[in-house]
Length: 168
Image (cartoon, rainbow, N blue to C red):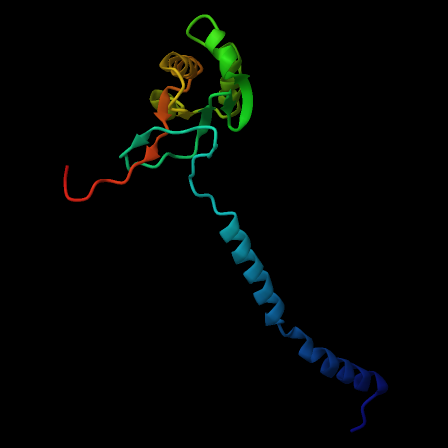
């Protein structure tokens, strides 16, 4: 039985297009390799920001801080999340128990992330990294301002001291 020209053409096209359903595994492996490296580089470990200007006090505490708002009080400046809010000298001169510039910044940060009722009972978490050479009165002002701004769950950052071997 003879085939028509149309039937022959259709048969040729079916043969030609039959092998196009394969998957190129080399390109797929390249994509997954890049994805793995990207995720490894950008993994989020909780790590307190480090500033060479701040010498943290030493402690034997083993609890690691959670990721939260961080205030760094160095001998020169007071920083919130790495942004300079005011100088330490200006903060020492400030009358009263609160720092208005710091309070304004903390209230802005609190307004960006509303809390659930359970979290409101615990208070907003905040970590204060204070240089061990700053006066306690300044640290007290920073803590008081944080508490009045809704950040009641205050943690003080310290440098971990390795536990002594063989008892006390």
